[in-house]
Amino acid sequence: MAKDKARYFTFLLYPESIPTDWKRRLELIGVPIAISPLHDKDKSNVEGQIYKKAHYHVVYVTKNPVTS
Image (tube, rainbow, N blue to C red):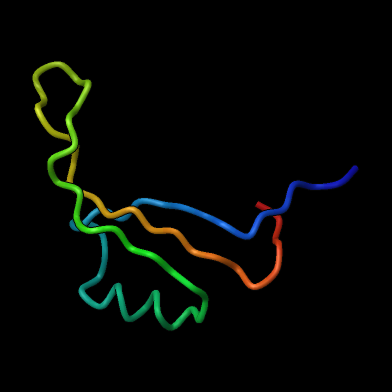
């Protein structure tokens, strides 16, 4: 049975849980990476909460397809 493979991956980073040199660390991985501006005004669907937690969206591309 073939396993699903991909080259494009996304994840979120929250400012309160990343090291101060996080951008440099991502650059050291050596693959193409795109980082969004800080998202701190996304509307929340949770009652009593106006905005979602501030976060960055990150997309990176591996050199070859890898198992997810």
